[in-house]
Amino acid sequence: MNVSEYRCPDLLLGGEWRPGRHEQHLVVRNPATNEVLDELRLASASDLQLALQTTQKAFDHWRQVPAHERCARLERGVARIRENTERIATLLTLEQGKPLAEARAECTMAADLIKWYAEEARRVYGRVIPARLPNSRMDVLKFPVGPVAAFSPWNFPLVLSARKLGGAIAAGCSIVLKAAEETPASVAAMVDCLNQELPPGVVQLIYGVPGEVSQALIHSPIVRKVTFTGSVPVGRHLAAMAAQHLKRITLELGGHAPVIVCSDVDLTRAVNLMVQHKFRNAGQACLAPTRFYVDRRIYNDFVDAFGSASQALRVGAGLQQATQMGPVASVRRQTAVRDLINRSVAMGARQVVGVAPEEGCFVAPTLLADVPRNAPVLTEEPFGPVACAMPFDTLSEAIDLANDNPYGLAGYLFTDSAKAILAVSERLEVGSLAINGMGVSVPEAPFGGVKESGYGSESGIEGMEAFLGTKFTHFVA
Image (cartoon, rainbow, N blue to C red):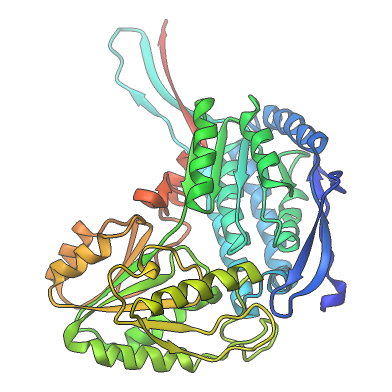
C-alpha cells in the first residue's frame, strides 16, 4: 500500500458501512509529511440515533448467545486481524506516524487483547452461597451490563480500542466505539475483521464531533456503561455527564511516569531499555517513562549515557525501514511539546537534543537534565519525546519526588536491592509498577491508574468485570 491508496472509512452502523451524514468533514494528514491523506465524513445526529437504536437491538440478542459461541466468534475475528496485520499496520503508520515495526507490534498486541477476553468469556463465574433456610438456594450471578459507549484516542488507536471492544463483546454487551478522527482507517480495518464474525450491530464504529457524540451517547438511556481513554480534562467532563445518569464509567487518563534508578543498576542495559521505551511512539504514551530520578553517585554517567543513546536514534518517516522514531501526531502536538521544552529550559533545565527532519511534525528526542522542581515539564504531561533527569541522595527522597505529581498511572524501578524493591512497591503511588523492566501492560493483568490518572481497570479479570453486573438470587422451594 502507498499513500495514494489511503482512504478514510465510512461509519459502521447496524452492520453496514455507511457514509457519515454530518455537514462537517475532517482532513486526515500524514504527520511525517503533513500532506492530506483524505477527508473523513463524520456522524450526524441521525447517524448517532441509528447507532443507539441498533445497539439496543443487538444487545437484546447478543446477551443470550452462549459464552462459548461468543468466544469462538471473537477468535475468528482475531484470526482475521492477524491475517491482515501488514495492511492494518501500514494504515496506522500513514495516519499516525509511528514506525512500521511499532505499528505491527501494536496490531499484534490488539489481537492478543481481544483473544484473551474471548477466552475469558468462558470463565465468567458466579457462586453459590450456603443457604440460610432448608429447601432453598442462594446464588450470585453475573450478567452483561448493557450497551457500551467507548471512546478511544489516537496514540495507540488499535490497542486502546481493542481493550474496550474485547471486554464488552466477550461479556455479552454491544458496543458503540467512537474512535479517534486522526486515525480512522486503521481502527476501521481492525473493527471490520471482528464485524464479519458478529451479528449486525454488536459492534458499531463512529467518527464525529466529539462533544456531539458524547452528549448523544452518554445522555441516552440506552447506554449503560461508558469507557474512555484520553486527557484528564475530557475525562472529568465525561465523568460528570455519566454521573448525572448514574452510569458506571472507566477512565484511563494521563500519565507522567517516574523511574527510580539506584546506584547498583546495570547502567548500559538499563539505559538502552529506557531509551527504547521512552521514545517509542515518539513519547506519545501515557505509560512512557519520563521523570528519571537517579542516584547522585551515578547521575552524571546516566545523563551522558542516556543523552548519547537519545542522540543516536534515527528519526524519520515511519515507512522507512531504518526509522527508530517517527513524528509526533500533528502540528498542534509539535508546537505544544516544543513550547514545554522551551519553558523548562528557560527555568534552568539543561538540554541534550538529538536530530530530527526539518519537514513534517517532528520533534527531536530530548533529554532535560538538572530539571528544577518548579519546571513545567515535571507537572505537565509532555506526551512527546522528552525525558527529564534529576539526582537524588536517598531512596526515601526519590519516592517522595516521584509521588509529588498529580498523575499515578505507571512507574519503574531499577535496582537489585530487595529493600529498595519492597519500599518502592509499597510507597510509590501508581497503578502499575515494573521492576528492572518496562512491562506494565499485558492482556491478563489489570491496567489503570490512581490520582488524576483515572479509576477502574482495563485488561485482566478486573477489565472483564467492568462490563458485568452482579445479581443475588434467593430461591425457596
